[in-house]
Amino acid sequence: MAPWIIQMTLVLLPVFISSSQGKRDKVLYCSGKSACKAVVAELNYSINKVDPKKTINLGSFRLNPDGTMKDKKVPLARSETHLSELLDGVCRSMSDYALHVDPDTQHKQYMRFAPRSKGVPRDFPDFKNFHFDKPDVSEALKFACETVVEELEDDIISLFRQDVEQEQVQEELCSRVSDFCRYSSHTTEEL
Image (cartoon, rainbow, N blue to C red; front, side, top):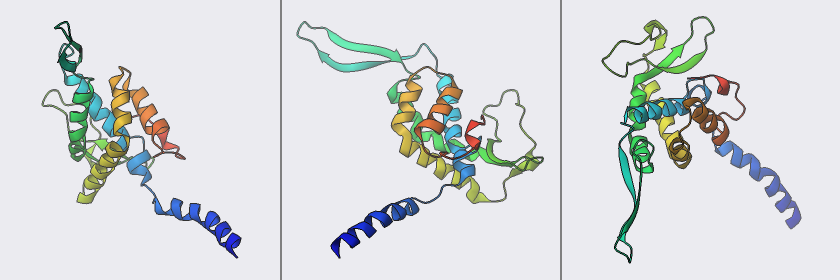
C-alpha cells in the first residue's frame, strides 16, 4: 500500500505545483509593449538623462597600511547604487501608460501616452484607441511592473551595468532571463 501512495504523490505533485503558480496576463507580461519592456524603456530613459561625466567612488574607504586609500571611480549612470535607486521608483511611471488597441488588427498592448518632457511633442498615437475607462488597468500595469522588478532585480541591474543597446537588454531580460513569455509569439515585437 505504501508504494502506491508514493507513486500517486509523485504523479500529482507537479500538477498541483503548476496550477498553483497561476496564469499571467499575456498582454501585461508578454505583449510587444509589456511591463517588462516598459521597465527597460523607462530605466534606459532615466540612465540617458544622467550626465556621463558624473562618477561615483566605490571602495572600502579604509586606509591601507601605507596610508593610501583604494577606491575606484565608475560612471554614476550605470552604477549599482544609481540603478537600485531608479528601480525603486520606476513603477511610478506606469501611470503614463494605457491599454492601446490597434483599430486594424485589434492587437492589445500597453503604450506610453504621456510625453516625457515639455519640449517638442512627439508623435503619439491617436488617443481614441487608448482605453482609459478602467482605473484598475493602470494599477494592473503597475503591479506587473512591481512583479518584474521584484523577481528580476538582480538581473536588471547586471544587464544595465553593461553598456548595451536597449533592444538587447529587452531581448535578454524579457525573453531569455524571465519566463514571463515562455510560449508566447509576442516576444519578438519591439517597444
